[in-house]
Image 1: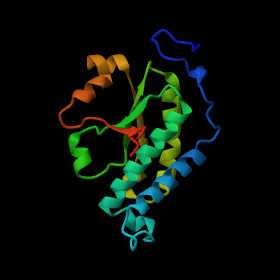
Image 2 (image 1 turned 120 degrees about the vertical axis):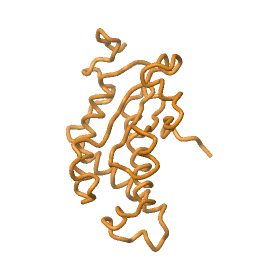
Image 3 (image 1 turned 60 degrees about the vertical axis):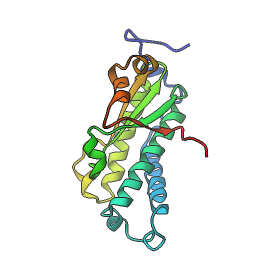
Image 4 (image 1 turned 90 degrees about the horizontal axis):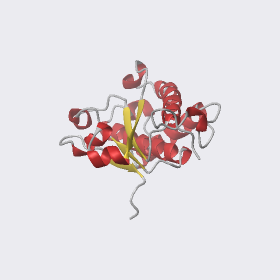
Length: 183
């Protein structure tokens, strides 16, 4: 049985899967795999282009963002079995239309709020920032944070409150990134 604190959140010390001592290897793997996923979507003649040049191409940046969202969502779900689904969302509807500011916003559907998910998200964020700054892309150079992980419960979804209200939005409805539908 899981230990709950006063607010119905799972206690931090009740991490289901222990965190690796160094998340930089995890962040590196997630980013490198996302870069490869994004390159695979490019025209074959562009796949071997230098990374700093690809970072200037809007279609590559969008593909990288989507791939990184998927990879991070999948990793979070594997770390915490209570995760039922992961959605991406934009802070504003204009953000998704024009360009990417370098941030990733994920909404994790869980049966109850969990401190463990916040701890994992914050730790992974720090490691992602370090890796992404190494790419040399201007969008990451001044960022203090890249990954925002919020939680939404079934009750919040049912009643349209808190982050559950986002699913009733007109312009920026969250989009499921994990689990993906099978074709």
